Image 1 (tube, rainbow, N blue to C red):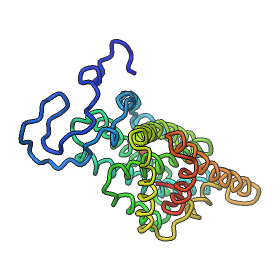
Image 2: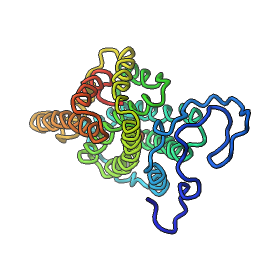
Image 3: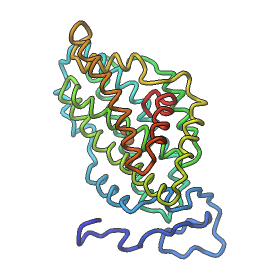
Length: 321
Ligand SMILES: [Fe+2]
Ligand SMILES: [Fe+2]
């Protein structure tokens, strides 16, 4: 896993136990006292949170940290034509809502995970910093050329409320790390290709690397979860159905965001350029669904269940988080 000579926690502490009692704050390696204090930890089983590659993801996260002030060539983000700048600011405004959800959700669950599962707690701490940095960087880009935030997204907000109200880590991680961030990983790829300036392309490239770790956590966890309980896939259908109670007629990407993506992908807001951009955006949305299904089956979900989850996700989430 880690290279020879590197000091891995797993070498010092071994794998965590399959399950732990809810009491006490004892870290792995310390025998819990007979009568532990009731901290109320809720994530008490290994396959819910830990898998063998999680320490490596934590190591990658530490090496992959970047700085939104110094590591983006902001000067190269100036002089973008107004229509493209406005479209980019609109997409970023919509994305910032979702970055906040991806930031606050792991923060909410962190104190519910038993300290015995140290490596995932460390990894999720890096995700919190990553998402915070995404918000910082996107806000900086939105205001770089004086446009600022564009639009309001009440339907996306109600869908994100459904995500943030999830109280079960197993379901929340599936919704966020596998479905939501899976979509964002693809979206960053699309934006890295079609963003109108080098600062934005660099920004999306950095964000994409962070996102690929978050998705790898979700897939690794899901794989371990399915190996321990092959019938648990139905729980995730349930999670999506619960979330739909919050979604107000959300289905697919919001129209104004599709339009803004088309303007970027075609390089203009009119005529042939817009037509070309609309074709590219339409193809991208089809790819989003195909890659979501591929991700789910690669983790071990049967194809029909993966397709059902994809359909429910599109209805419940506006195709994003
Ligand atoms: Fe993010
Ligand atoms: Fe993320």
